[in-house]
Image (cartoon, rainbow, N blue to C red; front, side, top):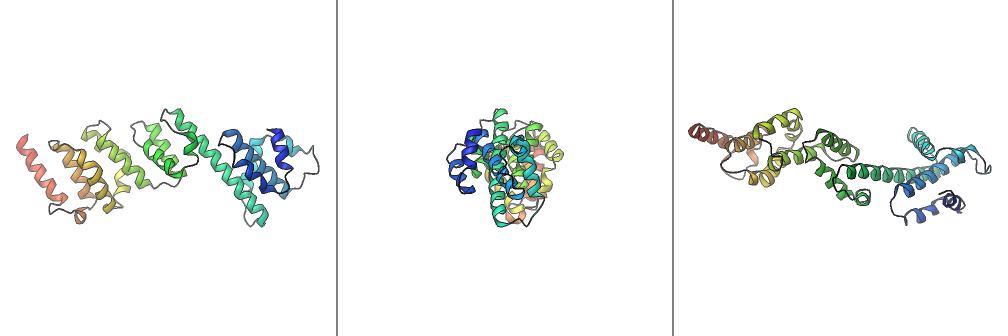
Length: 254
């Protein structure tokens, strides 16, 4: 790594190093080298020291230098154009390194995550995070919320995917589903988009509910009614009417 860094620092143009970095596969070592290189270059722009080959800068811990430089440039603005360009590159490789680290954590959960693809494919990243919500493990659930926040995935999508999972694949009873929805306060967010909620529930959830499962059907239509989905129903029977009919049917069968 030291020899590679020496060659990179000797390049005539700072950004020429990108041609080297972009040809490398995304590994922790290659991404950290890129972040370290740009941290050195930014530091040198702000506090010139390349003439002193034994300057303490080159003996500093790479991870600590990356952290300090990143923290410093993010805390200020109005940098000169050439420094701004270097900061942009540092951010790119910091993000990729973070993505790689997150993917490795997910892989450690036994979720079959493709580490390299997670760090380079935005669609795959989103689908992976949504897939994490399909769990009853509270620690994994918290990780999915944290990742969603980091990668700007709408909370509505996270909650909707989890609710779909609860209905279709969780194995929970209807009573337990109701309890979890209330505990996680899923509905507070989901009811903000009644049309999307109605569309998703009708397309992906209703088709999985057994026609003889009255408690599940009743809860399904109760959610639609409480979300105000009546005006989005294509049939003449509204959620409110379904609820009344199901309650009558339940009273007859019990």
